[in-house]
Each structure stands twice: as structure tokens, then as C-alpha cells.
Amino acid sequence: MKNISGNPFLTNGNDGIFIDSVAFNEIVKRFKTPLLIFLENRIRENIKSFINVFSSEFENFQCFYSFKANFLSEICKIVLSEGIGAEIVGLPELKLALKLGFSSNKIIIGGPYLSKELIELSIKNHVKEIIIYDLDVLKKINSIAKKFDIIQSICIRVNSQKYASKLGIKFNERKLALFKNIIKDYQNIKITSILSHFSTQMNDFRQFRKNIRAVASNLTFLSDHGIVIKDINLGGGFPEATVMPQDQLKHIAKEIKRALREFEVNYRNIYFEPGRYFIGDAGLFISKIVKVCEDRWVILNLGNHICPKFARCSLRFYNASQINEPHKYKTSIAGIIPTDQDILAKDYFFTENLLQGEKVLVTNTGAYCLTFSNRFPYSLPKILLINDTNIRQIFDSEFDKDISLN
Ligand SMILES: Cc1ncc(COP(=O)(O)O)c(C=O)c1O
Figure 1 (tube, rainbow, N blue to C red):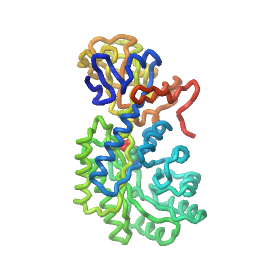
Figure 2 (cartoon, rainbow, N blue to C red):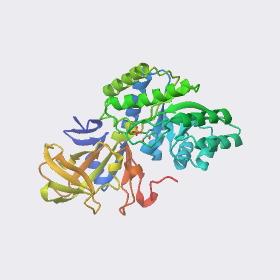
Figure 3 (cartoon, rainbow, N blue to C red):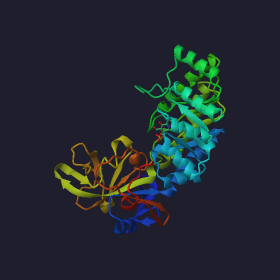
Figure 4 (spheres, rainbow, N blue to C red):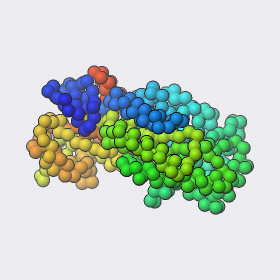
């Protein structure tokens, strides 16, 4: 049996394609395409692999799943059951995390804009940390914390120095003076951590290294001026687990440790906020070729409205109807949105024969596709959660209407 797309839960053998232990043919008999499928066992395996790797390198390590990667309740419940915390960007996500039962000391909240309602709910629920992207917001946090008679832990997000990044604080003498005054005057906050998140899809250790350098230089600058921060948070940015297999992840973890030593970063706890690594390769679409056009272009019944470029997935395409045929003929794949801009892949290696009605697997679509999906007037695909031989439909637009949080 061979893995498809490097995914052990997606196989092809004598009995055809299997998605975990469910025959592909059974799925396409029962459900119309396009169909979005999540693999529960793959999510669990990815989480375990991440935890194993990082806890064997770092003693005081904690992990917070970045809800924005995939905020479906059923997915977040799996993450919760693996003992992972939550990294949250807004009020709907926070309400969801609390409703699902994430314990508040494993919830961290942060974003470029923190509304009064979000801060209030966070503080009232004693969340572990609020992550700030600028110093101005501390006034609001302090006064709300004062109202609830709480000392709120704060993580400061610093600018990663990635080209043109606008997110996070860029310290200079003026901001340092302001920060010192804030620490002196605001009695209901305490600064506990520093965060830098560099990018998504970081395949190259040099990106991780730049991120560590950003944390290190800010820590040094602050401690030189009497501000000591004990915990560090290096964000997310790990690619799909099939793209970064466990031995490579191990290598990255070791290099991170080495770089922290090299830059002389002293820390008590180290945090990560993976999103894509947990869920990216646990999601796939089954779609259909609706049209074969000239010059080896095919159109799928799937498009950038539900499989958006913005999601930056490592998309792979397989002709499931001819899975045993060589995929070595350049083919371009367009989406169903009536615009020439809806291109899913150009000159992608695919089967020689292309037939209308054939089923196409699009893999690595578990992270950010739903988050960045938009409201083109097609109905949303059904969503299935597969675990071993069990198929559970977790979303049907006919009854559930929408995937949005509120
Ligand atoms: C601050 C922060 N943490 C974590 C993540 C998760 O990133 P990824 O899904 O690439 O691991 C992001 C993604 O943009 C982020 O901005």
C-alpha cells in the first residue's frame, strides 16, 4: 500500500484508495462533491509528534493551538482532548474556547486590535495571558483589570523584523521610556512573556533563527534597561506535517535550542502556537473535473472561495479516478469561480488523460481554507470527520447554514 501525498491516512493499494479505513468509493457513492474531509487520527498523530519532539528538547514547554487555523468546534475539541491550550485572536474564538471547556489558564489572547468586550471576557475568565501588539492598549487592559481587581499577565509581541511586517512593537528609546512608565504606573498588569511570530510555512531554519534573533535582541534591550521578561513565545509557522516530517521537525527543535543558547536567551518557559502543523495535512477536498478545456486546462467544482490562495496551503492534486496512472503530464487547474483569476495550479503534474466527471483529491487543505474562505454564491461543501471506519458529517450547509463563529 502506498501513501498518497505522504499521508499515512491516505493510501492506495489493491483495494483502491482509502481515507483512513474508509474506502474512497464508499464516500463518493454516499456524498456529492465537493466534499471537505478531516482526518481525526492524523490530527492526533500530528499533535503527539509535535509534543514529543518539543518536550524532549525543552523541559518547560507549552503549546497553544492557533484557533484561526481551523476553528470548527469538532476540530478544536480534538485539540482540547490532547491537552493543548488555545491561542485566540477575537471574541467569537474566545467564547468558543470557553464553551468547549479549554481551561482559562491554557488560553492566551492576542491580536492587533483588542476590543473592550474581548479584554473584559478574557480578564473575567482569568486567561493565562493577553498578548499586546502595541503599548497603547495597556491602558485599557489595566483599567479593566483594576475593575475586576485582577493583576493580568501580559505578553508583548515584538516585531519579528520580517520585511515589511507591521505587527508587533518596535522598541526605541521613546517606546522604552513609555513602557517603563507604564510598568511603574499600571498596577493591574504584569509583563510575563515576549512573543515573536515570523511567518507561516517556514521551511527553512534561517526563518526560525531570525525569529529567535528578534526575541533575543528585544530581551537584551529590555533587560539592559531593567525590564526582565521570563517566558518566551516563538509563535507558529511550521508547515504541514507531511511537508515537515518528524525527523525534520526534530532537527528544527534542536536548532531552535541551539540558537537560543547561541543568542544567550535565558528563559523560564517556552511556548509555541502551531496551527497549520496540527491540522494542515489532516484536511482534504474531494472534487470533480467539471470541464476539460484546451491546452490541458481543467476546471474543478472547487475554487478559491473555499480553497483560497490566501491560505497558503501546500496543495497537491491527484486524479483519484486514475490514481494508478502516472501523474507526469503538465496540467493547469482552474477553479469554478467565473473569473480568470481563479487558478488553483499551473503546469501541475497530472494524468495524461483528462475526463469530465473524474474525481480529484486536493490535499493539505486542513488549515486556513475555511478561515480565509469567502462568500461566493455557491453552497459550502459538506464536511466530514473520519476516524478509522467512522464517518461523521460535521457540517451540512442545508441545516447548519454557515461555518462562521458568532
Ligand atoms: C501570532 C501567531 N501565532 C501563531 C500563528 C499560527 O501560525 P501557523 O498556522 O503557521 O503555525 C499565527 C499565524 O498567522 C500567528 O500570527
